[in-house]
Image 1: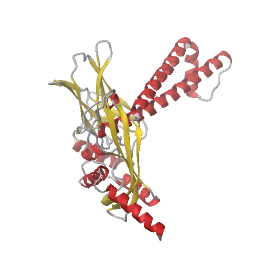
Image 2: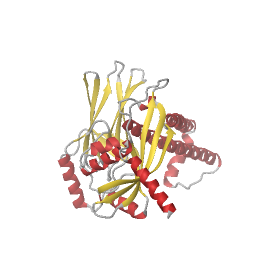
Image 3: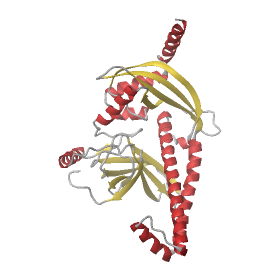
Image 4: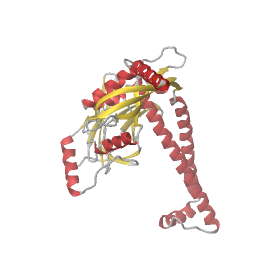
Length: 384
């Protein structure tokens, strides 16, 4: 009886501590916003969506509070090193091909026909070295892409947390982490336990005592029982994708949704295939970007069409500006927070502070689960 009473007192104190806390306020706002179907606001306060269609919620207890170092500076160092190693591997491949053109022009076509074929003698030695270089390049590319996604994720969450629009790559500091146990009641079921993790970034510029004003961001929500995880999985599979799009700081614009919807309806009639989340290379088409100057900003508008058979998660466009010597001057990004559906056309607007050194720009495309192959086209099919 004594242990039970101690547990009740402990849980009560934890719940009382949570009530009225900034973390509690963030959770309340998150689920209230989810009930109003406002993806723009949801994306600004969380890295994930609601796990189920929630009717009510409550904080059961605070599991832990901790502080950890801001991971981005170290990630950027590792990413820079991985970039150099990847580029070196690419250059090594190129140089070896240039040194052995005749031999590799025999070896490569044969390996395309039969990947298990083994040459003998000198050709065998060249083949072995070429395959080693290819494998090394593949390994370096894998590490590069993994760190690229990690940098993108950490940058995105930190940017959501820091209130002022600032380049978080130039900041350093600590991150407060709170873990709570929630009880969520789905609209069509009993209460289920979920674990939520929140972060708040306490960052400042080097050699500065000024801590940037920041807010709590929901990092993750996951079920703690098989029933809760099953409910979350069913919700993820059964959720109808929204036709709206949003950026963490400024909504991207969906163009011609009616035509995209008609295209998707026609696709359903022709095939029983049901789109799902794309987990590898995404394929898109792009029209020639339109760039103009307004005041102190350079505004670039780019229209993109998803030509993959599945939807794309967190599609991102980054515009890099260079000077006449090819030196990087400035960049800006926009992210489509909602599902980018097959056949859908979205319009994304990138705003970059004007710089007299701007000479030419280039675009980089990515998404949450991999890379993007972007093909320039003169126009999109009629009706999209």
